Image 1 (cartoon, rainbow, N blue to C red):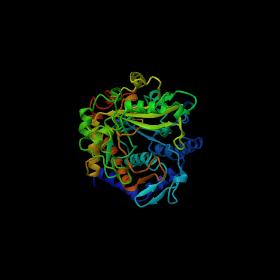
Image 2 (cartoon, helix red, strand yellow):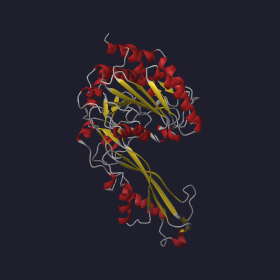
Image 3 (tube, rainbow, N blue to C red):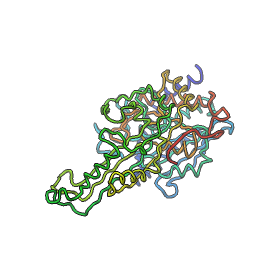
Image 4 (cartoon, rainbow, N blue to C red):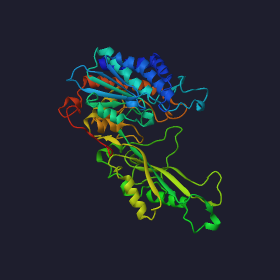
Amino acid sequence: MQQREQIVASAGDYVDSGSFQADLGRIVSYPSESSTPEGRVALKSYLDEMVEPALASLGCSVERYDSWKGGNNSFLLATREEDPALPTVLCYGHADVVDGQAEAWTNGRGPWVLRDEGDRWYGRGSADNKGQHWINIVALRLLLDQRGSLGFNLVFLLEGAEEIGSPDLADFAREHRDALRADVFIGSDGPRLAAGSPTVFLGARGGVTFHLTADLRSSSYHSGNWGGLLRNPATTVAAAVASLVDGHGIIKLPELLPAGIPDSVAAALEFIDVVPNPGDPASDPTWGDSSLSPAERLYAWNTLEVLALGAGNPAKPVNAIPGSARATLQLRFVPGTDTANLESAVRRHLDAAGFGMVEVQVGSSFAASRLDPDSPWVAWALASLAKTTGRSPVLLPNIGGSLPSYVFSDVLGLPTLWVPHSHPGCQQHAPDEHLLKSVAREGLQIAAGLFFDLATVASPADSPAGGTARGAAVSASSVS
């Protein structure tokens, strides 16, 4: 049996033997919620007792930055340098989880004790993200055990606050740019396109939230005595929203749209079908821009969603014109969107439409990023996955949701390859989060094959202009 076949087989054996399940049971038991002080204590224990020893056993030097600069994020940075002439890979994961929601799990399950049921391992963090970064750590261990060396240099970064927006991650990357220097980024988070579809994605859509508020008077007034004389703030805010996005989901303000869809992105999406998984809602064919395919709408275009809309007391309405109304909107956007000037663009539009009484306030935001699908790193990664699985992998230019991919593409200038080991129905932010055993098994084989190929197969890092350590960055984002 060839070496590559051996390591792929060893990866499958690691799952079949129960070793990965035992690992997963231990890592799930740490209630590392980043949203609570108690969770951050548990996160420190997880890094102390599980992650740091595992990476040290790979021959890595490990540095810790707990509560970096007094903030809510902690970082673990592990480094193994075998030879400066070899390519360097930067791996990433996050050790925190969302709220356990223990009271809402069903059938006697709970967030902090792994439950084995059929093809599912239930537990908080099993899919997002402990199970996924642990798969990559095990794959590296299998490679080192087989070869006696990795065959490349390794940098592994874990953060502790991805679920609350990765605070300070970009600043940490800027300050530690030299330590994080690499030729390629390989991370695992988010879902595959479908459970049975090995997937590579190259970035993530960004998001920016803003509020429209019409605060016209301190009290409500009788709708019979004052109707027709007083401006209704609810009607006004509803109309302001409709001037930005119509009742069929079409964005009306050009400044909230990208310049277009790059040819390489359109080509990558040409054969992608967006098919609901079991339990998912059916998509509405009449919603959104009908000139775009469903895949283009989800992965290559912007959407403006109304997250909340309120005035008066909807649960117990009274015969009165409310004094104020408020809507919260979120723009999900792809690279090529000018979000830096969003507030001024919306302000100009509302003024021109006669809605000067509506205030605009921009809230939280996160950046978009996307590696060009024509990057040679993409073809290299797809070939590796195809060789391991015997199937053609799915290529997504970016996912529809959010990840801090821009930190690695824009701040560090790396080609970004995301190889997820989970599936869309994993319920990662809900009760009953689970990891599919079949996807975890194949994911470990994929990771082992990918790392083996980085050590043994010619990659773009071997060409003079290939890796970022040798050449220029190859990604784009609309937010710096």
